Length: 243
Image (cartoon, rainbow, N blue to C red; front, side, top):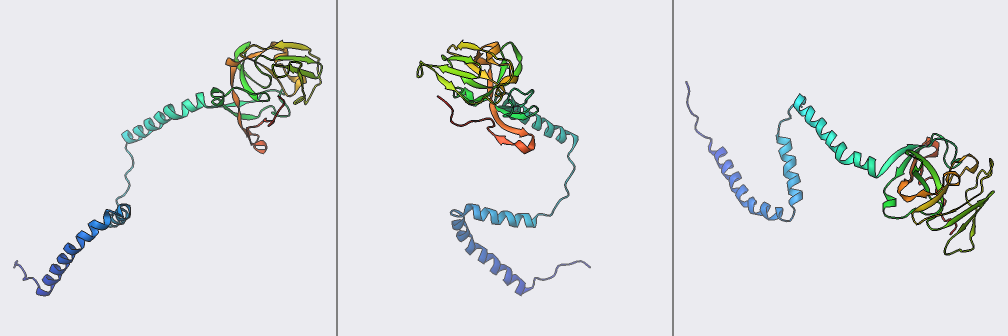
């Protein structure tokens, strides 16, 4: 037989007491939340999480998987590819022209952005497009700067410029002077550089094919990643060099 049970008087009084207490506490909670928003929000979110029953994770649908792939591809196109094309590129050293600074097979990350804000300096190692075959990349060190005259006789390199009209002797970097002797004098234009390999006896450089125009310079080594025993930031830097 169905029916209704009369409410217990004591339980009814307790409920009324709780409701009244909530009304008294509400203004205080509102006042505190204006100064401690983040704190209160964290507290309430924790309570909400505890009271929400856990649901089993559903496997993503084919449509959701495709959308995730599209998002990933978009990030690659918008972020990664421009960095790869305009900021830094990987290069592998081929040959012995820069030994012992760089060995055959060294894996380098090239900084392509710095020279957009500053000019290459004497002593910088640069990666550039070979002027006689722009699809090829070479790595050498800058010895002569724009508007200078570089004269090479045997192992001696004399550089003349406005500051040194009589010339000064460039002594850095002749690690290996063996091989055939190449005597040459080159006067550089306003957009030209004279580059040499550190391993002079094994390097085909400005002594043979002439000055390097600024437009062919791609960047400078930022990191050597391989071999792992020779990992280095700004590899090949000499620090302070001759004028």
